[in-house]
Length: 281
Image 1: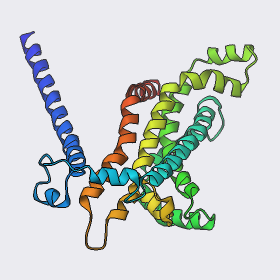
Image 2 (image 1 turned 180 degrees about the vertical axis):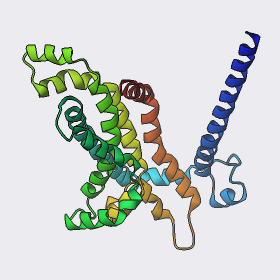
Image 3 (image 1 turned 30 degrees about the vertical axis):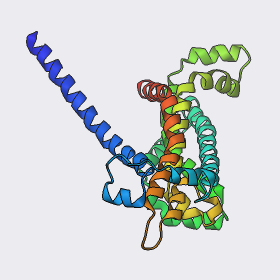
Image 4 (image 1 turned 60 degrees about the vertical axis):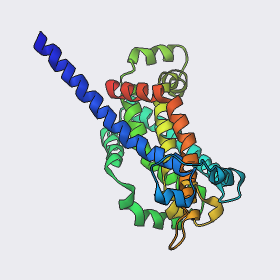
């Protein structure tokens, strides 16, 4: 018994040690980014880790007032692209997951496997065919040209989580809904969707954060500076030979705030959704 207690204590110490390492790895870059935005370029070069002395809010003020960069325009573009991606993933993914989970047909398993292979397919591998297809359909330098690829790469996770949940909803519940006059769409919208709220919220938040941080797809698609998203806005402060690093760090700090707040607020839904999808699947 004493041996088990010591073993549990060592396990707890090891877990806390790993957590402390992870917190350190995450917190140090955040600290440097936030504090660096309050420093002059000279202070940042001479003492990048120290606390600013004095605190200089000029970079944040210039960004928020529009004196430098186009923070608010890029924030609006990121919101438009992110919300469009989330809406596409949730709508298409819900219908696809429901069909694959509740409707039996010949290629059911093959189609589900095809979607799951998308989890193993990195965007960089599809760069050339993706660019050619977007050019063919006239989607270059358009928001839709960013939304569609992001949604396509977000669908596998959505379908995987929701499919496992829907598949284990009792058939008796669907039969009871049918007796009350609900067809397949009524069962989907009146019963399945409300029960799946944690999973839908999980996928929505993760998809929005992924879109918010995505630099590669907007870089590939967007040419007009007025359509730049937040990750691309950093390029406004980088020249060929010189980079305004204190302005870049201030910009990154402001760009992180909406995503971090959203994640913190929805954290319990994310945990519930991932757990629900894993257990039910």
